[in-house]
Length: 447
Ligand SMILES: Cc1cc2nc3c(=O)[nH]c(=O)nc-3n(C[C@H](O)[C@H](O)[C@H](O)COP(=O)(O)OP(=O)(O)OC[C@H]3O[C@@H](n4cnc5c(N)ncnc54)[C@H](O)[C@@H]3O)c2cc1C
Image (cartoon, rainbow, N blue to C red):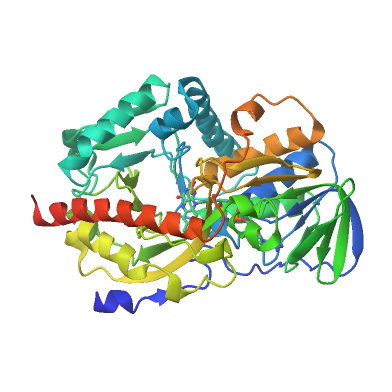
């Protein structure tokens, strides 16, 4: 772990940096039909969908588009929804869970369509993703979950150990559930492709412009340091950062997630782990999962376990290397890939996801302020869901029918106030991490 712990910690991620064509910040008062707060996948897909319908829209982004989770994520394009489909059945019943499964497929398809519509070259590989076990003790539960998901119509199947080896999936991953829709992509190229599409379409994008507040109800005004935007409607697309701005941030738990990237694998190193020719994205069937994927540059990107919540849910004060979980994610990688013990870790980074109590995004209008719309907090599965939300938000604003609105617009789940929230999250995470540690100890000792 010595050289591992000395690996560089990146300020943003390996995928994005301040763009050469950074858009001007706002320095006057302007007017638009719809003002969008946040330039990640949600904000950009909403702006593009509204623009297509002839609505004037303006994106306001504190740093540059892609600075948030959209430019930092692990790049798994998945139809995962809620915590998983058995959890959806428990929370919402069979019928709703089946609708959510269909919605999740729609989200993946929408993302694929956007990649081709906007000609985004983002190393997308339609490889599918596998939720894999690392110890036989995880198998019965995963098979049960797979049977539930299949009965709801999810496009998945169980991949037995013999097929995992035939596929050349790294040996630590014994068997698993293959999500056949989706695969992996370079998130930076994807979100910067959406940014380019918005700028090319003539949509005003103000970067380095922090929203400090929103006033007024029927015709709200978005306030920034040196200017303001008066609009008919506002869309909050600020994800885990929303609690720092205002509502509906009080319904979101921001969690800090750490990832790493290795140096490129040599031919021998790739052979040693089975070749991984299908490049399937992998997440583990832990309570707090690990994720791994092979990139187009033959590096491995992984991480995800060891997520952290900080008291009060404010993100601004906590996004540092000190608070990241580098040792945990790199330690898990060393356990899963013993053949690669001499492969250096190139760097680590981290970003914020928004979690909700029912594991579904918060989509809708603020109660008492119906001109303020929001689509935030995808519980770590937003690459596909945030992409699909653009068209749905546009239809909601334009009062058009949209088949998916009833599926995804739900009454926000209750979230206890502090200190109960902090105590609750810490205790649940403590128990779940303990369960994972027990599996990992068994896997390590081969018992
Ligand atoms: C480490 C990590 C790994 C992940 N891995 C995956 C994965 O493999 N697959 C998957 O599906 N999902 C994954 N996710 C989740 C996914 O990235 C997000 O759900 C998705 O990107 C959300 O997009 P968004 O546009 O809603 O939010 P964001 O991309 O977070 O965008 C919000 C934007 O709002 C801006 N902003 C904040 N405050 C202000 C302000 N005051 N004024 C103006 N702008 C502001 C931010 O700068 C940011 O650009 C991961 C997330 C992280 C952090």
